[in-house]
Image (cartoon, rainbow, N blue to C red; front, top):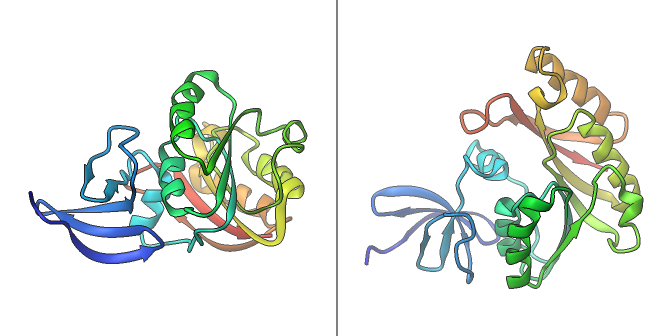
Length: 219
């Protein structure tokens, strides 16, 4: 079997490795593959075309997630990115919100396997519906393709995010306005977010996700 060569540790349990003469972004994991990714040695491939967080990291920007923090994840879908955050947050918890029942069924398989994921079939635009379940969190991650993305993010932060906490919002321009230039949509979203947050960094997710940006904020 070809050995895995660790090229760089990016943050806790996240590495850039070389395997079979190719470079891979991976998370160290004791779990089986979840979405068709490769598993070699103690690592799971983290595919940037399937995960915007992986795309952000490969584009050179990293958030240093401590393994003990609590995260509220809005828009979990079937759990691709959540599965890798679960590898990172070995001592923490992820409250994962998903509205659609179809991907949630696949996501439940992941949550049953991993004790640090709390799956909630809820509408992220209505945080009052899960306010009795979700505790105060250190970080909010959002990947929701809706027109009012920044409003949903801010509303959840008011309910759950600690003062001094952080967040990442993955912004899809075409979901907000299918006609306007993406650059104009991004300016609008950044302006909206600045009303409630300090913007730490933002950037494009090309070539992995067209017409998307990430925005890292502090509350």
